[in-house]
Image (cartoon, rainbow over all chains, first blue to last red; front, side, top):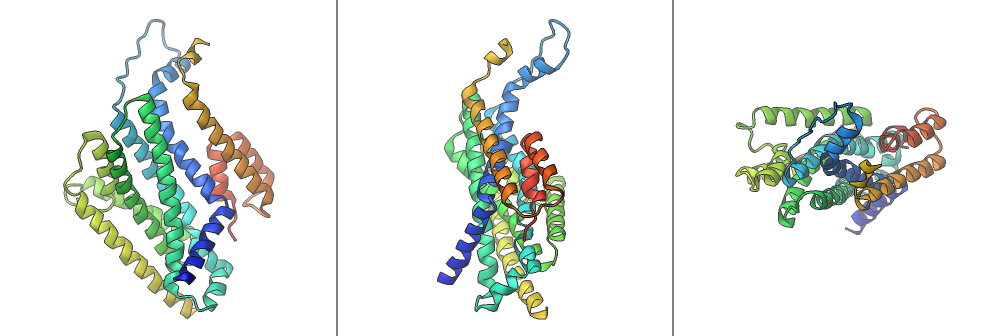
Length: 259
Length: 66
């Protein structure tokens, strides 16, 4: 256990060194907060840009607070996912390429603790960034529109975080299974995209798909109650995370021993 | 100037502030790092000129991880 903690701390330190602890949260804040701000100031923005004829009235019905917060979440499910995948695709593949992984694994370090410490480090970063970013989006929405109950905020936060965790784990899996970081990132992005599109199109058939979690989180914010399929979707997500982690340890071990 | 009156600066100012932090952090990192993907000077311009996206692009693409 203490060995795992050492690896984990090394991971955290590494993320300090390349400023991940600063730029990922800031990016999440800027991504999220831009939603309530632009929808609040939209009439003024149109007024200052458009050469509208004199006397024209712009009447945009103000969106509800829930819809604004949900659109903040949708920012995270596109650009946020992109940042997470691009930021973590190199964690294992990059170390293997540069030979650091071999240096660590020469010591009596189990493959499981090597991979799981990397996974846990990235996990912490993702949840921290999502929390900071989403909290500030919530605050801005409250200031400019209406306050969303803090309970709904936390519920949607956890659901959405679970989906991001699935994306993260898929990225780690491909990072461990493939040699090149670029390839790992590309495949993970493709999978996240295809999963969202398929389960969006066939939403009545795939209610349990983990990529529905993002949709369920925003449904909670706009409609006010959780869809019935949230529990199975969360369970499938957790199961998928465990299986992928186990598989990535297995594949990584096989590849390392072969090389 | 009346356009600017309706804007609450208490909410906008923090955004500018963290944006500034992002620019500074990426410039500090750029000065410390040995090599980047592409010429270093180019990244200085991208970070300073391209709002918000510039520093993020630098961290995601410009940084060479080794």
